[in-house]
Length: 462
Image 1 (tube, rainbow, N blue to C red):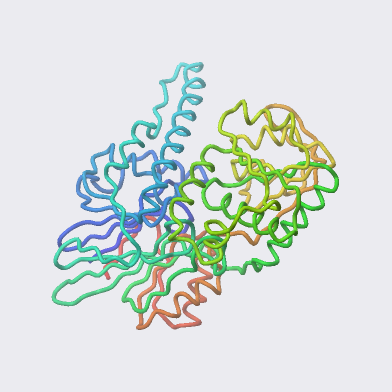
Image 2: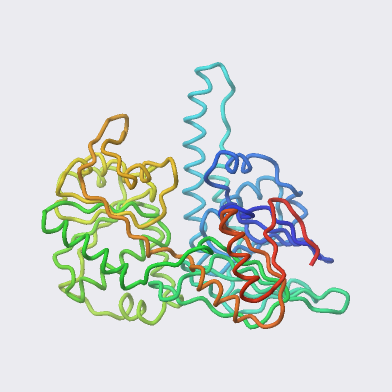
């Protein structure tokens, strides 16, 4: 059999791996490339295979860098079945419809610019209508349930502990009378991460594809991270200012709400009003509540079984643009969670415009800020930034809290890998090139395995 690496190879987005098997072709993930222009350009070219030749697509989780090219795949001829966990099936339409809206909006903006220079209109990568079709292709599967694809091929999902519904994939293939087991780690979560369970351990394998997003570093502990968050909010409350938290809608927002709820009920925060100003985050939060079976014990006790408490934070969910604008008229000493996580778009920019120049306010960054983004400029200490064409002074206090990553760190990845018996062949994926090579060296030093760091579109016989 052959594995072709069509994404997340020496980069962290566009996750996609094509299995050429004796009986069929299976695609694992179909993610959108994000970041550098050269990566994003890959989204617009033809797939390096005929979509109609793919028998099955297996999705590890609902983040757009693992799922976001599914509408294009269907539009270009895919007629097969899509397997994912049940929570991922529920989250996917919400994520894809939002992505379709972004594609339409960007295409409209580029078209307006193109027409002014006599060029042709720009077509969106896919539309909301294309995204809406995807749900009809998807079938939800329980964790740990064996799914036969033929008499010689079967798979099952294991909990990856990354976000709601995230999975590692175990795939068994019989070829020439021998059975080989291939593992796709998916995105592995950090131990003790809020809400979701810790990653499940896998006993044995012949081939392992393992992510390496943070394969060159260690995270702060969850307790230290929570203490930093509480201290930043408490200090801002004392000054009467608003706390702005740019946050990604799926995963990070729900984690922050969990921390604020736990801290308030424990008396570590008081009189807290929290605005969740993101329709996508609201929809994702509602889906989280539909799947308490995915929660760890503490989250289940706090979110599902806990009795109402006068100390719990007051949560206000704002759907409409009008409701969002009202926040800046009446909010004082509040926590405002809004997208996007790097301040490049979304409602957070309006809140920055109204609060960034106030000394009593603060902005708390809880995720990575890529080079060139507004968030990165603020983190790097810019005294003035441009928001909606207006120069805004940065006088609010800026906090960066780095322990909330939903990805396992180097030692957690090595621990997960080290529990797999046998002498598997390793492919390091889903990491920046330098990080992936460093992590590959760690694996060789620790276990002595045969390790590859595949290039984009490179194929290996296994």
